[in-house]
Image (cartoon, rainbow, N blue to C red; front, top):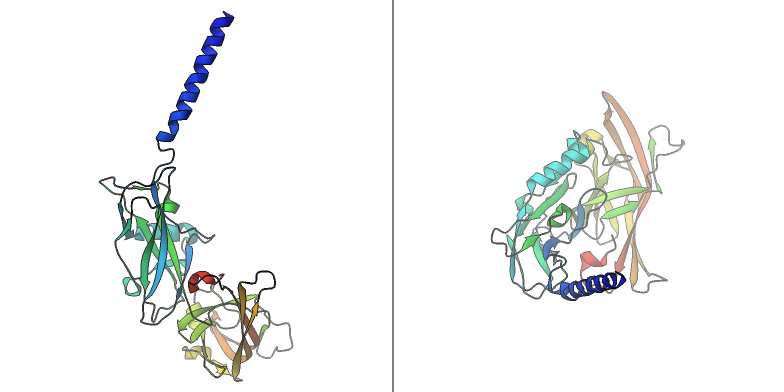
Length: 327
């Protein structure tokens, strides 16, 4: 009996090794086609596009072919805009707060080919998307939702996970002055209470208007306000170091009390010598405005004074500008 047990054990070991020796011949992980567009905590993938007015700026969206064996066929991958997924995302994240909804980027702002070619023997490809962002209003949160379409002929397989077959691209155009400023040195006081403790925001986000102009929201108003679009303050940077402010809504009674200026300084990182720190400081900010919608039929007047500082970190070893900036 003991001899029979030993023989059975040897037979089982031979079967196991036989299977191990042959398993490399089969695909362990399928050659799935995917986007490389990792999501942020906001449910979208942020991309940064240099603003060039009515000129095109091309963003290269990576695509990958997964698998434990080499892709052995030419693929023509079909891409389309995915409106339905964006609608689902908006409702699941924001419910009835429609002012928070991501807005689908309209065709006037972008163009792309409907297919991407991936050659046999290659596992990556770049999908070019051309953006023309003149006159885009960044009060809205623009998203370009894309999906990989299933192929009826089965020449390629789409990754079954939705976060890999879809790319929800949140578009952030940028110029030399846009980005998130430190707001700790900018004070907001109600008129008549200038000696009281001011309202201070740690960060103030700015958005592109054109090549030399950004906008931010007045005082302590931010993206949480449904009526934020009424309180845009525009800042235009000129070549002589001056910054001019203006507003396009006369109801906020915007008034500038001083001429503002800006400075740009640069410094290499002490630890990472390839990293360049560029600082943009807006000085002598001094303006007044009226919040006329917070409390119905009551005008609340504010005075804003101080300065703003933007830090950009640039990897000097990366030639592509949108990739070299550490956002």
